[in-house]
Image (tube, rainbow, N blue to C red; front, side, top):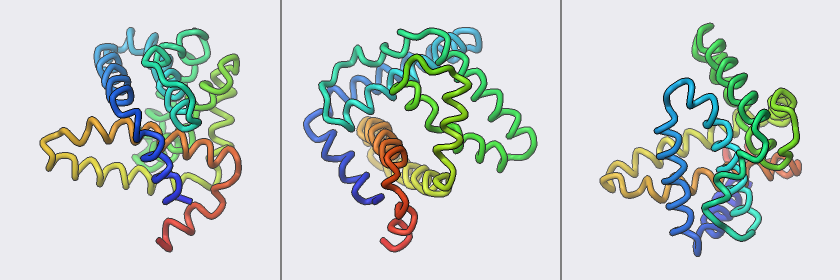
Length: 196
């Protein structure tokens, strides 16, 4: 399952690299600019929903436009509430040692994909749905994050150029992961990763 998600992500990006790199670059710049606390509260959740919508469109083979990044602003309250609560819960978890914070972050990791698919969903409900959806999948997602980390180290040896390709790949792979666990087709996900 992991191998198919990873290869699907590569195939889905094959003819879309220019749009993918541009979109993720704009997302990164906007997220960095909004890093101040006040602006970040107002913008980060919406951009996260927008990049999730864009990533899901790539994963589903739909038309891609950079403007999809801003679709997260169509519902103003839910992304802001979800982002605020998610940040607060992760910080609280980190205060009680790092492991609880990591577990909370893994459990809430699918929140923005849920809001991307269901824009009218309440932010708190999206957090709860993500937590329920990630039951039994946190370890698998952590292994996927470790793989991203190792790929990131490899990108350093390309003088950073590899990051332009890695960032869209991560977003699309996360979207494919979300679609797999949502459909229930990831039951053998961990077993296949360990075997392969």
